[in-house]
Image 1 (spheres, rainbow, N blue to C red):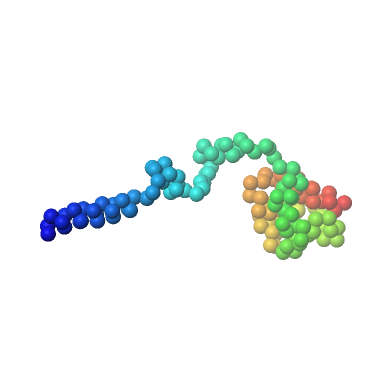
Image 2 (image 1 turned 30 degrees about the vertical axis):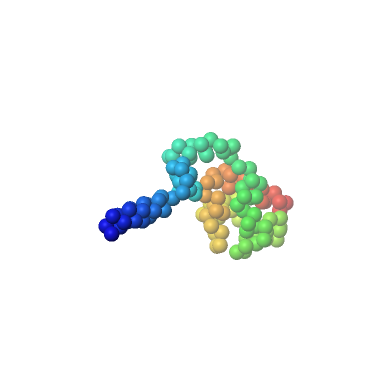
Length: 136
């Protein structure tokens, strides 16, 4: 009976080992378990590639189209609508310095820099100027 038991036990152990190894060759396994995405942090090599890909400062309209329109196109949180002279006149009367301070620091429901955290003050100034051009 021992003679039959050893080969049977060996076959059972071998079959368990075979099923413990995932199917596919080594490269297929590596491809299946690799991370879905990656993170690029400031100072990493990939960050310099991203910075090099940037084509310079955004225009006022580009900043508006990417960041400002979400609120100023529909008046979210009391944001003055683009081109609505009645809503913009009291703000224009305060002067550009006050408008820029509100833009950079945020005001009421508007977050600082209108969510464009990478925008320079010049880009934000151009965006405000673009919105004011639509009023006049």
